[in-house]
Image (cartoon, rainbow, N blue to C red):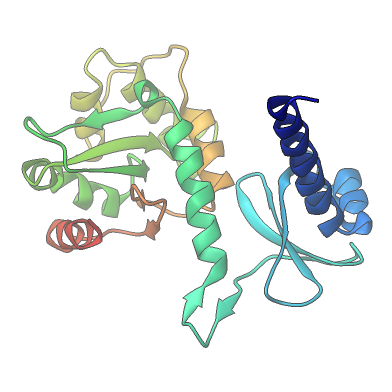
Length: 241
């Protein structure tokens, strides 16, 4: 056997050993339970946590935990008090970032800076939400600071509500930015329908834990629930950079 073939064979064996070891790390009871009761979970996400007997996994964009015997599923935060770190939030940020980054920006209503974009925030918004209106009034300040604001529709009352209908009309308008601004100011938006992503965005928001509006998602995947004044948001984003 020549040296190249030998190296290739050894490398393949090492890879096989590595992935088999990973598979063995996940108790069979966990895999069996998740396969049977949690359709669509990310099988590659299952891993041990620092807590003995507890494993982490991702399902529908959320971080969850399961006991070694597969009997108990836990939803909540694991906080390392010694290092003062929220381990659940760290993982959730990565998951949220991946979901938001994969979403087509063409389906969002984007208010971009005229010059260089230094930061981008994604905002789940309700056109009838007073705090969303407050944030929208500060979008020009954010744009001046080089911050792009991307809106995802999140009509809190759900499908069939007047807010949902208004959200569809704003998205289907020829001038989306003007329409959403009018809606947020309490004005009348011309009723329109078209193929739209409003329900899709509402469902996506729920999958990452959005419960109210506005909800801001930063580039890091960090989620900020509620209204944040422009000056504070600019300082936060510049500080993270």
